[in-house]
Length: 261
Image (cartoon, rainbow, N blue to C red; front, top):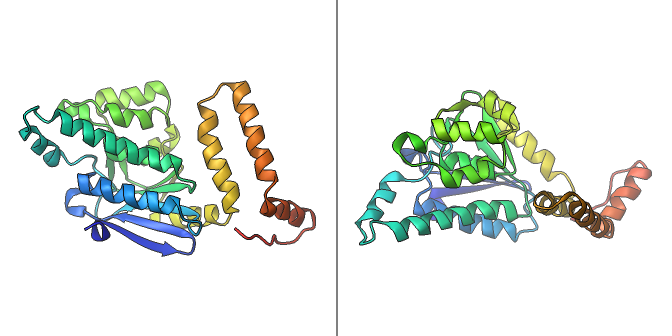
């Protein structure tokens, strides 16, 4: 089932993943979460994939959790408490897998990205949105504050802007999302803009990007002095790599580098 629920296409060194449940607006059902988790984990171990694109089939990127499936969990004796906790834990694990992957993950967003779908955009390293896309953490409108989505959202945009979205349930458009820092680019031709960005990222030395992505997130959790000490060590390790030595030599000699990775 995962083979049809999450489609995978390879374009050079870029893996294109398409959430493929348009009838449910690509909701993060138990099955979709499992498909994303297993695929991201597999790609993370690959030396052949240098970037990942995540998009949605149909008229939306992702509408968040599957509310009908969530409601079914209430049939348990605890009114669904254990099932809900398990769901949110699995969702958080998948979101954190994106961050821990060595490859940059680019969200290619159209239609809507709501609640946990907006969380998914915020969890990706980069995002391109089609003009007209709407973003919202709108659970408060049905009585459920988007507490787990706010973890990723509040690490992307300013505090008061994030809280306004969470507490009002209001939607923002793609241009506003770009202004706030939730997405990088707004495109009229989403596939072309996403392809251009993913190919640019994938053209860089893979090991350098792997060093950089991990260090980028790790240093953000540190104090200033600790961050400088840590990233200095990262750069020392990066400088010791054969392909980095070759890249610097090629630059100085005004030729193309002969990289192995």
